[in-house]
Length: 114
Length: 109
Image 1 (cartoon, rainbow over the protein chains, first blue to last red):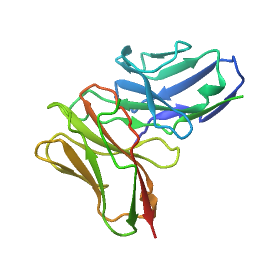
Image 2 (cartoon, rainbow over the protein chains, first blue to last red):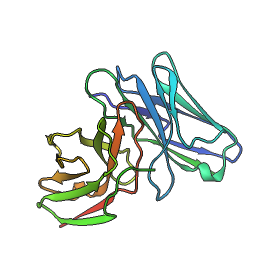
Image 3 (tube, rainbow over the protein chains, first blue to last red):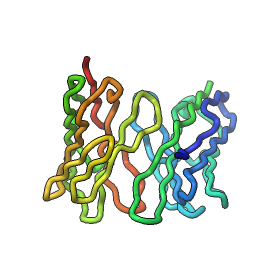
Image 4 (cartoon, one colour):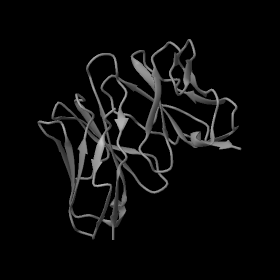
């Protein structure tokens, strides 16, 4: 079965650079979530989208922005990168159709800021 | 903040059942109980979820108390590959998933 695809899997950036992370949800899933997981920490919710509209917002820095496109893929844009942004970034998707409510996660993008 | 409380860590012998408890005393009537696990920096893996009835799938069983204030995830025959951090998450339809500290399960040979 198709899963959530994230790209790139690994990314190295320098401080003050920008980065774009991409997420391709499971086909027919209409909701996308972004999470950040720092070293030794639990995943922290950043932002979510339903039908291309922002649906919820968590602890996402102002330097970050995200959007969901017409084909339902999503991109997380990160600017003025800081060393503390080094983390695993997970995307998850779910569908509002039917009785299924669980979300499925991708394998993540490991961002390293040097 | 997470709406659940779980033990920090647990051990289980390989081949035995692993029973992971979770308290969610403030759960609302329309909120589900979800279980995910994360194996060393991989993406969280969905295990099972339920509303008020007990649920079973190919991975695990979920037992929810009648008052819905607690639940137990049961891995019937734990293997070394089940060593992971297990997260119990409470959420409603359309809500995001809030991860707490979870339980670090170690399956021992």
